[in-house]
Image 1 (cartoon, chains in turn green, brown):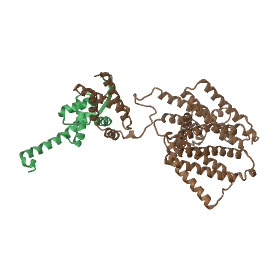
Image 2 (tube, chains in turn brown, cyan; image 1 turned 120 degrees about the vertical axis):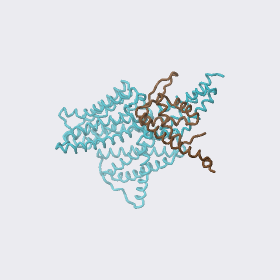
Image 3 (cartoon, rainbow over the protein chains, first blue to last red; image 1 turned 60 degrees about the vertical axis):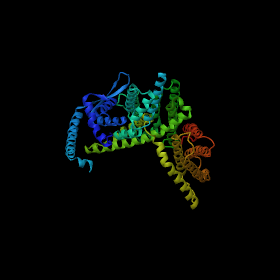
Image 4 (tube, one colour; image 1 turned 180 degrees about the vertical axis):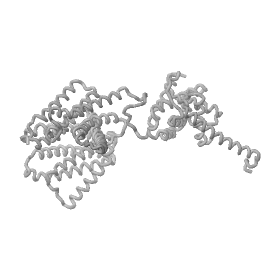
Length: 119
Length: 457
């Protein structure tokens, strides 16, 4: 199942913030985590994650620092800020409201299957 | 399978991928490092999952996504990056070069020295007013250019022998400017004040180009530098004017007249220090920001060419002769200088290997029409030059006109040869850069030979 691009874009901010709220991380690991949680349904184009990270950094939701990995390569780690946590809480409320609304309507439809089938 | 070979092959592919990214203006070096780390991690993960390294690389690149789309996203996020910014003192520890701040400091010191140098004569009873106007006029370039040359000597780490030559030339120039008993306000004094800066500017060019001053490339760099310096200096001067305007306004409000301070300190010191600061800015920005002089040249070459063609057409259709006025020769000298500048700065920005382009034809039209206009003017003047007599001004104006005419005529020959596929563009550049010596020589003649020749009038 491929998820529509607009949905991916809209969900990227809360998803990245939530992953960083677990622990500081870097681009590749964030993408791995997204894969893991979504069971492979959310297919992000790898390169597109970085502009999102940079936007969140500019907005002050996350902070970046460079570290040297065991391999000797320098790696850019991101961590969530207090402001980012506030944003995450707001996002969460909004998504929960959307989710609850959708759940409600799915349930009504499932009580009346023919309408869902379009018959 | 040979693992070292595969590893180098992957490294080469990553290098290539990196150089593709580097061409995108919106993606900076730190971002490339970040993306590269990602790519390598991805390749390693895929290899662990059982893919061959080259397959892993292909998959990793594919997952990274279309570079155009990514760079568009970067550009949207960092729209400021599409505007090249001149970072003089970098706040980013990554990008900071060890010499950057020190150079700014040294340039600042030279600028302060230049600003104070113009005030030294005042200590010896020669304040900057009408009484000593002649002295300041003749020596103006000597207050600033040795310091500017000093800055370049420091920057290029010039050898001591070259420093001795430079010092010797500046001392000789100081003697030439002050030893002759020229008539105050006379024409030889004015000519000296006009020509000494030209000669010394070219000497400063030797300091600028360092070891490369004999090469065409080194001299061309100096020509580029001169154009950019001029533009930056004009901009700084405009800024200074705005500063003074506000200063006068707000100090006026509390009843203080700042004009005496402006005339004796702000203007002279600012004008002198500004030269060093502008030079430092031009040096700092040369690889960061587009050169402005060639842009202006592109804009104005067609307009000047059109103006000259229309001028020639109107002159030949109406049959009007050139009105012989004492200033006609100077006007045409300035026209030739302008045309030469347009030619020089379009050469300075041109790819020497490229073939003829439409712009080159416009350039030739410009040069040829300027030559014709000048020839007509010279013809008109030559007929009556003997009536006027050979005053120093007239000889100087005629001399420079002749030099410019020779330069432009031969440039036209080379240019047309290039357009017809004979000869290379580089020969035109060489001709221009070699000709700089002729101007320096002529300026020296006017400064050193003219005053005694014309009896110091």
